[in-house]
Length: 426
Image (cartoon, rainbow, N blue to C red; front, top):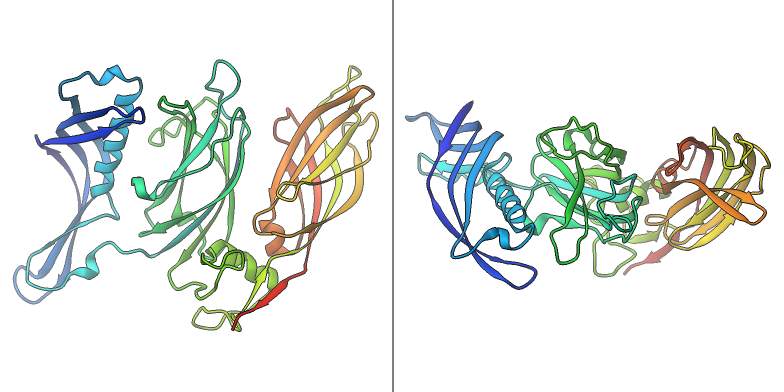
């Protein structure tokens, strides 16, 4: 049963807040009130009155949440940004404690109702690849962006990326793992901030994706548009985009493997899927891998054919350009470049380059387009690719738009030739 309810209370909760600058503040939270749609579940059904053994309740949809904050014996506005930071933290904690899939179980009849409690159903693997065209929050220089990701806004479950200094097109290429309790209703939230040192970080933009949009066991490559507020999705201002690779693995899927990169850490679900695709291995009916005593590092040769480019922006006075492409394997720092095509905005190269890749699961391919000049060069745009798709498909052709450019596309042909290194375990 779902019904709209309003709850008003006058609790007095005292919190000890420790700030980054070492100042401890006792904060009082009172006058908590919220309106929303509550979900009531009556189960299990039984023969005796009242015909159900327990009641589960949770907040299915929040409409409004209000509360009052007061620093005991002090002024909260004395420290810039403190009020907003504390309010956001408390708001997230209150909402998470009662919002579905979290639910409170109230026994009505004697019995064991542990099966009604919140339990993990799977793992969400997230690769935070990059962001582009972020809003600059600094008056001098550029923003220093970092990302915060979570499925539930609890401090011990929220993940934070490294800070990329002075860059509005940051590249992270970081992997995170999240516990999922209800893939039908939960979603992944990504918030991009500008680091301000000792002061509170400033929000650049945020985005979210519902987990029910993911197909279990399949990698989803997606760009998400950043907005100011997740509850108000219409945002005319361009705050940038964030690039993610997502994989949801329900419990019991692809178990029993060890990570060949580390003797102490288990292999992530994303690595298992890519590893199995690269090797073409089969799985047994119970989900475990056949002959899983042999582990493999995903190593091979990546062949990249830079076919052509379309609609490049003019870089010379005459409205033309002399473009060439620089190819970089980010982790290995191996570079190659094409020949220069003179006076063309639609150059054709048809040049193939081979890269020996030692860590196909975590490396990236960067392609930068430059205009050749007699006394230097001008940057025209770039595109960044993880190797996820080519590892899974083996070979493909596609067109990629250039970032940091007014126009332009690159036509590429990628092929993966695996050269696995096997390790035998006793």
